[in-house]
Length: 275
Image 1 (cartoon, rainbow, N blue to C red):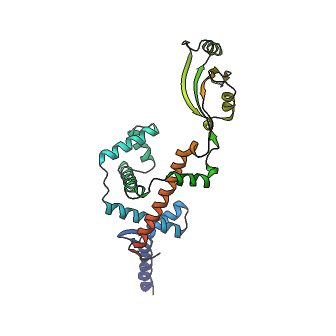
Image 2 (image 1 turned 135 degrees about the horizontal axis):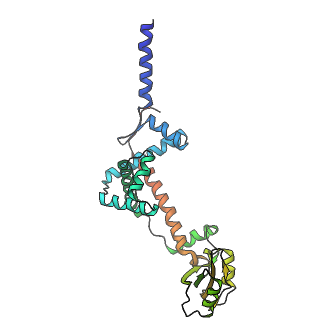
Image 3 (image 1 turned 180 degrees about the vertical axis):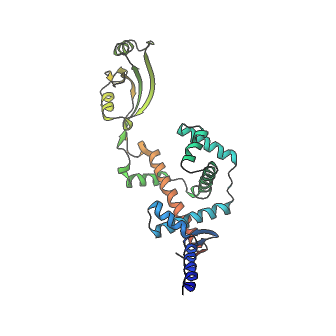
């Protein structure tokens, strides 16, 4: 009896091991395994249905990029990696060390960056390019439908910031604005009212054109604002037109991507082997 049970038990365990890492879905020749589904579900805390949809989308994307023959040369990848390192304030050697400490080899990271660059190029060439720039009437309609997403009105102000560690030096510079005073820094800026803190906006509003604001102790030094000019308050559509356009384009690109992949999925050869 034992001689019969042992082979049966071995066969059962082996078959279960094969099922755990077996082919679950074939999407245009791109495989999704049962192990991958389980791993993504656990890591991303997603339902099985949502996980399968995400993985099918991923395979459709890979298949489409492969068919489009998108290529990224090593020099482009190197430039991208250097840009990422610079933004993070790291050398590439330090990046390699950090990645290794997280169990990611440099070669794997380079491949990930390459794949992301291919996706971005594919998106720009085949999806974003299909979105026709909006007309002014379309932008106005979007603005009127989503007014709550945009500021009520803005004022652009031309200012000179005077800053110093010494209150006395700052007062001296304010008395002689055309002269350079040691220990006082000047900086010309164009500021929008909707970007200012309420306290600063109130201070600037109380200061007439061509005059200084009351000096402010910031806790790290002293600051005064010379108000060169304050523009007319802009409100309504024209004051936020560029912002409206950006949001409109973003929304329609997302929709275009969804439509693109829905069409791919409806025409794709997707075989469910086991779930």
